[in-house]
Each structure stands twice: as structure tokens, then as C-alpha cells.
Length: 355
Ligand SMILES: *[C@@H]1O[C@H](CO)[C@@H](O)[C@H](O)[C@H]1NC(C)=O
Ligand SMILES: *[C@@H]1O[C@H](CO)[C@@H](O)[C@H](O)[C@H]1NC(C)=O
Ligand SMILES: *[C@@H]1O[C@H](CO)[C@@H](O)[C@H](O)[C@H]1NC(C)=O
Ligand SMILES: *[C@@H]1O[C@H](CO)[C@@H](O)[C@H](O)[C@H]1NC(C)=O
Ligand SMILES: *[C@@H]1O[C@H](CO)[C@@H](O)[C@H](O)[C@H]1NC(C)=O
Image (cartoon, rainbow, N blue to C red; front, side):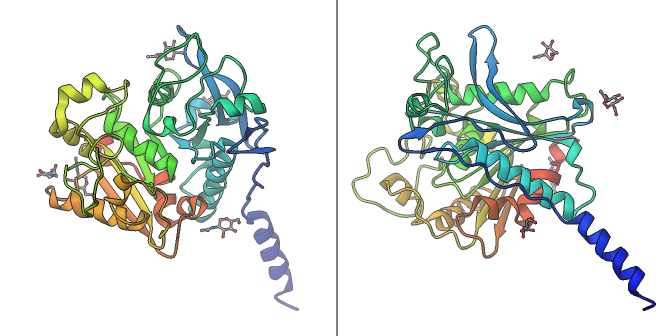
């Protein structure tokens, strides 16, 4: 009797604080035949024409957290979708992970974090309806490695990494975001592959001390040394980009990569804020090609081999972190809501931002 008002109050508080989780949007079509629409997503503004280059008139669709006061934004998370190009789902998954984060840690403030999810659509998405005539499109998987657009005809040689340069520059602009501390470019699986290749090829700017890369369960990595942990027979070009740094760079970085050479690229790369994450039970193969098999037989083996390589090259670089997520397999939501995922996506600020 005496306790019941307290219990009622406690249950009210509990109800009020129950964490939110928005249902994933559904879209007709599929990754093979093309997606049929660009759906509304809760908490986001969907921009069908986000301009990445005014002079060229280059644009693509993106989702961005709606209703924020840009003066109060301290962090941006640019989330790269997976192989199915389902940017609506990745925005929503990241946004739900942010609900988890703010629920568990009151120092993480929703109103301070802007999530952006760009959509790298292909020509099937154009015929099916999700994409529109005139916007940037890529080949089915060529956006992952930073190759150039396939449409529209009026724009040539626009790399998917040029898009990332533009989105990063948008957030780094102090006139628009005066209090922004960190931009995270991150992804899982194919999105992680893209984030890692971007870290390898991006041409540095003065803003790079505020730029973090979150690389979760990539199917393969651009390897830093020319040797490989697993020997595979008859694998021509095993060390060529996107699997290695010997040759075959995309137009985005050909001149710069040749000028820097392997050692210059590696030095720049290891000086970046690299935040790797692997699910300890990610035994999925992900990529059957011999170039990937030479890195290890599945995601987690490739991850362990990559970290071993970093150690052998002189130690885990000062600005690199590695999170191993226990009991998580090839799961984007699992990685985003893991302890390391929450930390690196929404909380961690590298000491490069203050040094
Ligand atoms: C945005 O936030 C700043 C700093 O808190 C405040 O001064 C400003 O009035 C806010 N702007 C709007 C439109 O609420
Ligand atoms: C920063 O944003 C302002 C306001 O939109 C714009 O005028 C300026 O050109 C931007 N600066 C850069 C370097 O893009
Ligand atoms: C890491 O930082 C320490 C102390 O600042 C420095 O002595 C060391 O050379 C750095 N290591 C690398 C690999 O950059
Ligand atoms: C960053 O902090 C780590 C410890 O967290 C330290 O080992 C490293 O030297 C620092 N690096 C820089 C560039 O300050
Ligand atoms: C994240 O939030 C959802 C919705 O409340 C919950 O089901 C899930 O268990 C949470 N995940 C973690 C890792 O906290």
C-alpha cells in the first residue's frame, strides 16, 4: 500500500523513457531489378536532388536528419548503404542506433547529431522508379570502389568519392556548422568497403583532423602491404586496387596515388582517424574473388589479418582504434548498436581534433 504511489510513478517514468525505434521503411522492387521509390523516412528529410557540385549541376538523393539547429550540431554521421543501395534503411538503422545511444548515455544528445545517408543508385533504379532522370548514377557495385558515374550524360568522370568530398565539405563548413567537432564517414559491409577505400584515396584538406572513418565488417580491404596472409594460386592483380595499392587506381585518385606511391599513401592513411569494427562471429564470406580470399576466408579472418598486418608494420597507429564486437555476425544493426559502434559513431572524439 505504502509503496504503490511510488510504483505507479516509477512505471510512468519507465513508460516515458522507453526507447524509440522506428520501423524500417519498405520499398517495392529489389536490388537486382531496381528499387521503385524513394520513400519518406521518419525523422529524416529526403532530398531527391542534393546538389554536390553547383557548377556541374550534379546531384543525387540523400536523407538527412530533419529539424536540427545547425548551430547546435556538433557531429555528423554520413552513413554509406550496403550493396543493395537501400539508403532509406541505413538512415533508419543509424537513427535507431542513435535512439539506443541517447537512451543509454545522457551525454549523447540527439539534437546535436546530424545523420546523412546518400543513395548511390544505378540504372535499374532509374527504370524502376527510385531514381530520376538527370541525377548521378553508378554501376551496380562501382560506387563502392570510387569509380565514376554512368549517368547523366551531361556529367562525366564524377566519382562516388567526389560525392563524399562534397558531403564532408558541406558539414565542415564553419559558416553553416560553427560548432561541428567530428564528421564520421561510416558503413557496414559494402559501405565499410567504400569508407575504407575513401580513407585510402581521399586527398587531405585542413579539415581532416576532424574526420573519422568507421569501417565495420568490410567484405575486403585495400591491403597496405604487397604480401598477403593467404596464398592463392593464379590470382593476377591480387595487389591491384581495390584490393591493394600496386596499381589500377580509379580516376578520382590516379595522379595523386602515383605521385605518393605506396609508402606515401600508407603514411597518409595510417595518420587518419581510422575506427575499425568487426563482429567476432562474422564468418560470412562476402566476396569469393581470389583477391579477397588472399586476405582471409571470411570477414572476421580478414579483419584479424589486417590488424596483424598493422601491428607488423610498426604497431597500431596512434589514431587508429579497433573494436571487436562479441556475439555479433554480419549484422549492420548489430554493429551500429554494439558498444564500440555506439562509441565510435556518436561519442568518440579523436585526439587529433585537439592536437
Ligand atoms: C539555434 O541555436 C542557437 C544557439 O543555441 C540559438 O542562438 C539560435 O537562436 C537557434 N536558432 C533557432 C532558429 O532556434
Ligand atoms: C560555406 O557556406 C556558406 C553559406 O552557405 C557559403 O557561402 C560558402 O561558400 C561555404 N564555404 C565553402 C568553403 O564551401
Ligand atoms: C605515436 O605517438 C607517440 C607519442 O606522441 C610517438 O612517439 C610515436 O612515434 C607515434 N607513433 C606513430 C606510429 O605515429
Ligand atoms: C592519442 O591518444 C592516445 C591515447 O589514447 C596516445 O597514445 C596517442 O599518442 C595520442 N596521439 C596524438 C596524435 O596525440
Ligand atoms: C536498441 O533499441 C531497441 C529498441 O528499443 C532494442 O530492442 C535493442 O535491444 C537495443 N539494442 C541494444 C544493443 O541496446
